[in-house]
Every structure is written in structure tokens, then in C-alpha cells.
Amino acid sequence: MPRRPRPPITKDPNRNLLEIISTSLQDLRPSDRKVAELTLAAPDFVLNATVDQTARRSGVSEPTVIRFCEALGFLGFQDFKVRLAQSVALGMPATHSVILPDDSVGVIADKIFDYSMNSLDWARKKLDKDELGKAVDLLLAANRIEFFGFGASGIVALDAQQKFPLFGVPCTAHCDSHQQFIASSMMKPGDVVVAISNTGQTKGVIEAAKTALANGAAVIAITGKIGPLVDHCTVPLLVETLENTDVYTPTISRLAALTLIDILATSVVTRRGQDYNSRVAEMKRNLAGMRGSL
Figure (cartoon, one colour):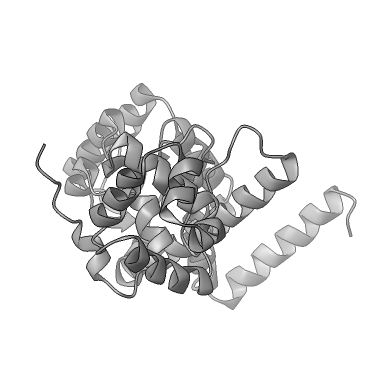
């Protein structure tokens, strides 16, 4: 079998190696992936281990360990460990420590907290602030806002709807394809759709976005990947995360999208002027009183 070409991703010296491994897991051979998962779960062990020790703990052969290093673009195990040492010294800013079946509850808690915070930081660095500004401008000028999403993205849409006082105009969330199509069919210039799909390929959301655009409304797409939805929107907001297919991985895409909704809502309310801000503050004080937390 011919050797796979080395991924160009490792040519960027500014990228953390652990980050590279995390994003490359699905491109590796199954045996190579075992070495990758060990490196993510126990980088300090790999740093201090020999090829033989790394192979035995990964459950693979020594040549597989070498092949894994070469697949990432390194000359060998020692070359790989030099870059790994640099990455560990800088912390683990964008990796998910693989959760193992025998991990204690405390270890699982630490791993998920670390992964969530680090992946959110990754999303923050990747977010296009210019496109974000355009989205805020659209929301500020909107007559009404409709949020569309399914599944985890539907949860984000519902969260956005309950923040409608911050947006200052009527807001509705639709998590049903028929309702999305009906709502988008009734939209007009001056209205805004916020279409949410982590994959960027959700057919119902894409059809609703196309319909809204055809009726003159603007469409803001919140997506984790470049996909068909981006072709049918006015402003794309790419919220890239390091989500992978590991069965234990938390749904970081949902957390990132919820954070972006908070950013949009807060940005809109702060730009509506002092009078509006005072009204929002009064509303929150009254709400606190209803909760008995004055």
C-alpha cells in the first residue's frame, strides 16, 4: 500500500501538535489512531517513553509508532517528541483528552472541562470578527428575527428566542421543518433569519434559508463547517470547533453556538443606546425580584 502524503497541517510551526493530532484523528489508520489517542490522553507518558513502551501501551507494534510519527510529517519518534514537548510546555489549548471507560468521575470532569474550555478558545480565535460585525448590523436593523435549527441546533435556537428582549424586536424559534418553511415563506425585506446548523448541510434549514432569501429577508448562518448553508446566506458565521466522533466527546458545537448567540445578543443591546439599556436593566431587576433574589 503506498504511503499517505504527509498532512501539510504540520508545516505550520505555530500550531500545537496536540491540536493537530486531535483534528487529524479521522484521517489516520486505525492502528495509528491508537497511538494518537494515547498521546492525547497521556502526553507526559509518551514524552518519557521509548518506542517500545509507547507501542506496548498503545497495543500496537513499534513500526506502527514510527509510521504514526511519519504520517504527521516527522522524521521519526524523537523528532515527534521534540515537537510534543514544545506543545505540552504551552499547555493543551485545543485537544480533547480521550475519555477512557475506567476513568474516575473526577478525571472525566477534568477532561470535559478542559476540552470544552480549550475548544471554545479555538473557536474564538477562528471566528471572523468582520462577519460578526455584519451580523450585528443586520440584527440591529431587523423588524423581526426568526431562529431555525434542529436537534442540538434547535436548542440553540430556543435559547436565542428567550433572549428576545436583548434583540429588541419580536423573535421566534422554529425547530420543525414545516414551521420553518411557513415562517420563511412569510418573511419580507427587513426581516432576518438566523439559520443554525453545525454541519452546514441540514436540508430543512437550507430550504428555509433559500426561501427567506427569495422573499427579500437577510439570512445569518451559524455553522461549524463550510457547507451548502453558506451558499444560501447573507452573512456566514463559522464557529469551528474540535468536535470528533469519539463516543464520549461532549457536544462542544452546541456550547460554541450558544456562546455566539450571547455575543450577538449582548452586542445588539449595547448598541441600542442608554435608554434601551436602562429598560433592559430594569427588566432584569424586576425579574430578579420575581425569583426572590433582590
